Length: 342
Ligand code: PHE
Image (cartoon, rainbow, N blue to C red; front, side, top):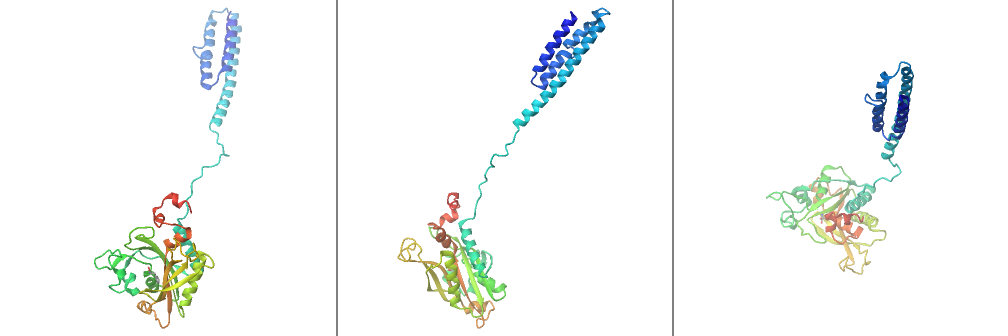
């Protein structure tokens, strides 16, 4: 009777153990059969009712069943642990062959590109690049550039001043860098100085109260107007392409004598006249001239020994020509749809 009971328990337990899917389930099966209130334990508690002859035989049988179940549980627990690990590895698997997410990369602003290009050209010719203050003194912006009191560019309607006496302002040109270079550098001097300048202009397609200029200056013994023309023609050909036709028109600046403006023949129409050149056939690119002897003298340079030339070029206009940009405002709005085109 009891032997059969043990056999039934043994078989049910082995089936139950083999059918478990998880460690927790296996543990409850173990408790069900081998626990204090388990089925096998219950049978063993009935041993007392057996005859002395039967007792050792059943005892041995019961112990065999217990040992068999324990070893089956041990085996199953290893199987379940391996299965759990395999599932975990599968769930947490990393596919190292999936391509990475691309991070969108920005690039230089077209103004910076145009400036970098010019800097490269001048540095290649032995020029040093200078940086200077945008809040400037009248001394540098006007006085020592020969623009006396009453000069139209000193007017409050043109220039942003910080003080009643019109001595401190947002620089209206990069030309004060000529004076700062003469003051701080040893001769001979070959510099360019790019940067922001400010004028009280209304905003339209070609004007902005803040814009960029690049100043250039050479001072040495025996420097002449032909050096100015030769250097600027070389630079312009590198920017606008070989064979670009230029012309120099007489002009007036207080700090140069003689003064000129340089035009390039319109690259759109080849000089016939079109909307790009406003029907002129020519596009003005810069102002230049031989440094006025008084300007040299005011900075302690003897005009009998030294001479020099200087130029000032608008950078926006250059970038607009270079990248075929029709409206100046696009350059400052920083609309990503515009900037992405370069
Ligand atoms: N500073 C002048 C301007 O803003 C340009 C210039 C620079 C002219 C140097 C001659 C020499 O118009």
